Length: 333
Image (cartoon, rainbow, N blue to C red; front, side, top):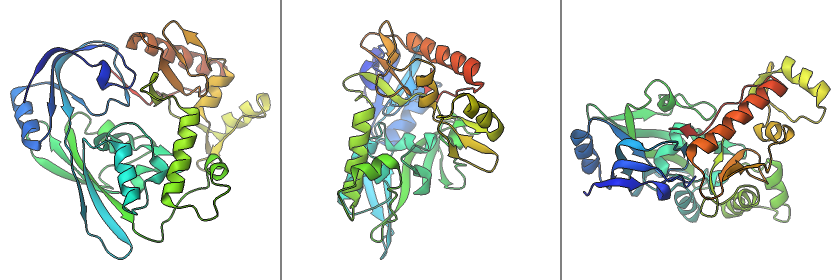
């Protein structure tokens, strides 16, 4: 293991924010992770750096989780369980599963980040959430260094939410995740309008076809972090009472919504932000993406604070104009 001091994290976060870590170390084994935790009282955990906005230098030891490996187990006639280490790149893992003929993750293609962070956020896209495939996960207690198994129910998954963002936040480090996937009779979800449009010329789409459709949609709407710094969707889609929605619909007849329950609906945050006039707006080196208002971007030399100021400006405008509080999806440090 090798520690680095005053280490730039610019290449370790998809926003491309140039902040420094007091100390930095990348761990490739469970034992290395335990050793680092014993040596350092306080650490800052870093996976793929895809769901974070860094607004200041990190005055701690930054531990990059680089655990790797994929194991296939418990395969029967219709299903298979696959355990992937936390440091595996998420998109590469999804493509690997598709190549094996394992179904269930294809709608989550091209989502940035690593396997270990996907349960924390309960990542989702195009009518699917990762909780629908997770059987369990193993996590290391940062204080006791003991491994605990969390079942799907233990994780308390919600919309872009889990127990790891609430009751046990900062107490555990996820080291691997086990997924239950299909080997035949795949229960695919192609009901999302844009996916149907992409697949309209394909009668019986394969897992690969669906994945390619999702990739095409994401590439058309979302900027590549390697080309322009961003962290994907910056805000959650708000869930509001039907009474407020009906009030807004009188003023904005075109406002879209998706039913959540008999009393609540979900409204696209991107629509609200665009309607408020922020889409494509630039503020110095930071701004709102021109194709997707839900995405904040770093044009090259923005600071995390500058990006965060735009987010707060958007929140204030949406609250004033629509009476809707927008919740930030990205972790801000």
